[in-house]
Amino acid sequence: MKVFFAFLLLVFLAFSGYHLSFRKFKVPLFARKFYLTGLEFLFLGLLLGPQFLNILDEKTCEGLAPVTALLLGWIGMLFGFQFELSNLKRFPFIFFEAALLEGLLTFIIVFSGIYISLPFLIELPEHLKICVSLVLASAAACTAQTGLAFVSKKNIGKYQATIKLLKYLSSIDGLISMLALLFLFIYFPARDSSAIQNAILGSDTFIAAACFAGIIVLFNLFLIHRKNQNELAMIIIGMTIFISGFASLMHFSPLVASFFVGILLVNLTPEKEKIFATLASIEKPAYLLLLVFLGSTWHIESIWIFGIAAGYCLLRFSGKMISGAVIPELGTNMKIYPANIGFGLIEQGGLPLAILYDFQQECIFEVTGSVVGVALLSIIYNDLLNPNLLKLLFKKEN
Image 1 (spheres, rainbow, N blue to C red):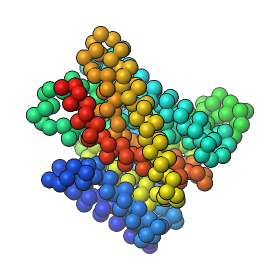
Image 2 (image 1 turned 90 degrees about the horizontal axis):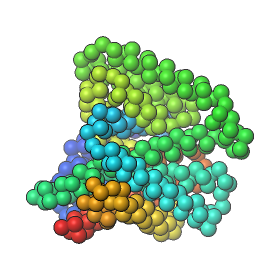
Image 3 (image 1 turned 180 degrees about the vertical axis):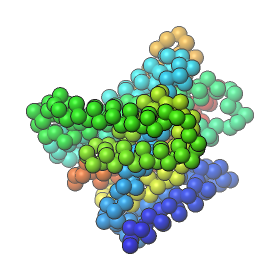
């Protein structure tokens, strides 16, 4: 009974909160930042969690696992739909190179820093040290463009070229994170080198690839004839539920599986516009629900976690600034962009939240909660710093 009550409460909060969040209220900049990104729902989830009201306790969250898997699958599918080849070709190919380079450099810098620093913080086995470094680096590589809403409309024209590039980078650099997570969920079940070799080169990989191809063929058969919006919505919901449930059953990532299905669908089906409209229609409620679930499992066990989160935030900041400084050096056409464009790449957005919750659901260890807690604090730090850094970027560019 508690599971049904919690489910109804979450649905009510998500759809009612949607009308309050993501709005530009006339409030101070600090408070407006929370309203614009929905971060207040992270603290609402903390209030509903075991530490306070205990509505979303561990048992209840386990009962709602199909809902969380669907949320992850929905977000993954939506992100995959950003990689439509016909749309990507409308931009210079050097933009795509810049996005991959920016995401990859940030990933490498953060991964290396965390991997080297972990032994000084906690003693972990080698495979778990790699997993923690991978997931934190994956979350760090992502960028969001929500903060660009703070740019004054009268000034948008002055910075049009830079804003265009920032939007493109924030849409593409998450690809590095998805590829890293794909490796993570192949590597994670393995405990030694022989197990890793079997996981990568053995029959499991062949079976997984065959199942994936079968799913794509099945869904394209469903979509071969044009359908109205309601019929298409039912197919997409069923498709996402099936993929997410199958991935969870196989102890794989619903986020990653749905992401690759989304890439193939957007490039193969003629119904892609309708499918994207269906996916985007509940993107924000799904994001708010994810925030609530993450908040309910958020534990701050020590005051030191704030300092560790600041260090992680600084490491990511270094990665974004270094990768941003490299972008103007990619070619003559990129010289028009400022070397400090990394100031516009600080906000992380919703994809890292999905990555963290996906990791938390599948990689259950004693340190998992602490890792997620550090990353959540860092996301809050970055979101609060982002408006001031954007002002600094555009002020210097001007």
